[in-house]
Length: 398
Image 1: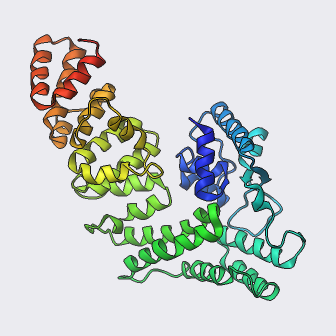
Image 2 (image 1 turned 120 degrees about the vertical axis):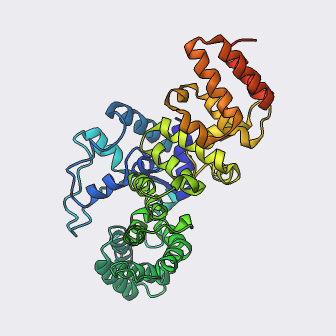
Image 3 (image 1 turned 135 degrees about the vertical axis):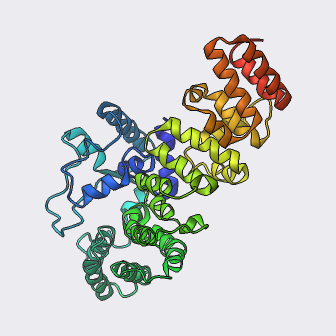
């Protein structure tokens, strides 16, 4: 992994670098475990981070070096229990002192260290603002309202007062139960108004603030057992916004005929991938791509959003150009180990002659069946001569 690029990407997207955000973005720490830890339900995260400890430490140390090369400033950032206002006892990240330090260090641009009130670090306006941001991120809405009132008193001309007021009001609003029939309106408001506002004001810390709103919507949709044809009104959409991949997977698999909905299939592929089942993620991507390559292609063209973007780029970087609908067949050819996890039902679901021909070739090759191999080559030649050429080159048969 290119840690310098990952740090740079996070810096470009958020203006800072947080090891926790990297863990969550890359799927190395499932959000629901992170949330349980922040709620005080876990002693530490040692058993929940999906990387071997030595590999994790090496990655974080490399990222730390990259952050220093970029001129970022280290800032200790301990995490506290969301269920208490006690800020004297930070949560323990790990039993390892090294991991505790690495994961509790936040990196920012140098200029961000000098804000409007930084000439006097005990300035009451600065204190009120920092306390307000902390309360919003920690979902302590009443405390946030109190700190907002203090900020009004100390800095009536603060440029973000109105925005802070909106964020506090929405936080208080999330304590109310959703009214039936208003879920879609609530979803659009959270997505189109609150999310951009939170990202602007809270920056990288907005994830924790926004998660409570998305969880509220996800639970309301789950209560309705919604089979709406709009995938944005499926509960998995809200769980995806929280990056709760286990819930995304569970809610989609419980959906009747989810295989007929390309958006749900693609969302499931991402969820399975982030749950560290690479094989099943790629197979689900094959199904989604075979069903609607136009939709899937649009998702794969978003490198910051799609875990499969590098594979898609490799596909288009081929010397011999293929058409987009040939992507599932090429994917199977480039990942021949997938053939061991495919059955006749899966072949029927994909329903592409080139895919079936490549599967037959790989199966015949593994079983040493020359006659079937030759027959499958003829079928692939009739369907896609380019793919046949790639197959022959891959296995050095020309």
